Length: 153
Image (cartoon, one colour):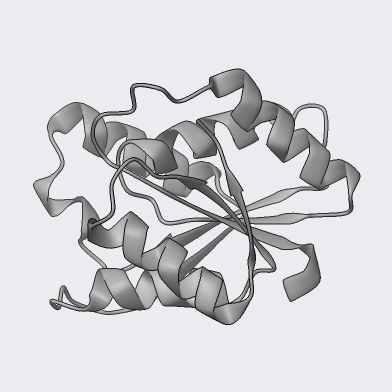
């Protein structure tokens, strides 16, 4: 996986109001046009799910792109409801690769997943509405690492 051709995503699990799906899709298309091939998805509900589904649709037109699931721990889905679990397992089945970053849940496994995604990409697509939480910390880390950030809102 070449960092210069890899994009990661980060965004909120809840309250996606204000998310512009057309802008999100266009940003992915722009990145694909610029040579990006790998897309790292944290496999959470909410924004990650929307990004996965958008990229899955784009794969029909751009079959060379790869969706890579970055799973923070083996049982990430444990607190998902039944519908969310079904979508999670469907996505796992349909992604191009799965990176499992911890064999069990730990208080820091989500942060380690986010750090892995930033460390292995050159651009981050972010849906950020508040200055706290995992998405905020991921964006802050990306800024510290000099990663280009594209905000979709």
